[in-house]
Amino acid sequence: MGFNGLMRRTLIALMLLAAAGQARAEGAGLAEGAVQAALRPYAPGFTTCAERQRALDPRVGGKLDVAFTIGKDGRVSRVEVLTPAHRRTYVAGCVDAVLRAVRFPRPTGEPVVVPHLPIQVGRPEDAPPEPEPDEDEVKPPPPPEGAKPARAEVARKVAEVVARIKTCIVEQGAPAAGPPPKKGKKRKRAKPRAERIGPVVVTLTINPLGRAEGIEVIAPAHPRDHVAGCVAGALIFLEFPGSEADTLRFSKVPLPKL
Image (cartoon, rainbow, N blue to C red; front, side):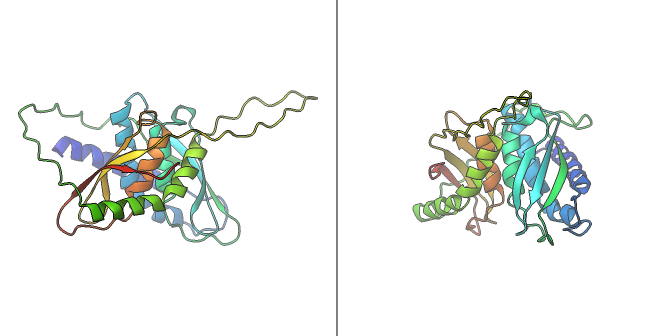
């Protein structure tokens, strides 16, 4: 990563840390500052979500604003995208899944609602421009492919978060509420239809610390939408077995049926 890229990531990370500082819980179930403290280690995940969204579709910009609920177990139980322009986008699904990886302190009493968490998606105005690609630059060779036993272990770890991915997909894929019914008329509540998700395959690399990098979702219908975001966000902070020496590549790892 060049100097400009490093500066850009640093600026975005600082903005996300500031956003975490703006996230305050409604109610007395969590101590002051507990939400911000729990979110800070996950700021790099939000940065990755935003950067990947720009790479997939730079037209999606501005600030993504989400509200979320912290359940009695300290886990996020519900995420709501407040900015209409970001609904069903990659970044919305990715942020949703990252939030579900955060372990908050358990609230006392009822679940706690955090009404606003703004995340910068578009390029900050003061960020340096992207450097032009150097055609003569020698690219490093791709990481070696993981052996069959390691591949099976990676597939097993991915399967552990399928329930989280499904919840994220259903949540982010929910259609916006329609206009209220007119007085005197009762409108039947339509049953939510399950979204059809075809086979989903991912390609990723696992660094020596056991963290996933370069997550790519291979699915003809879902390379850029909230489905891909939910998958990627759920894998960012998943703990894989590290190789202790090398970064290994795992291409075409299938997910269980979504």
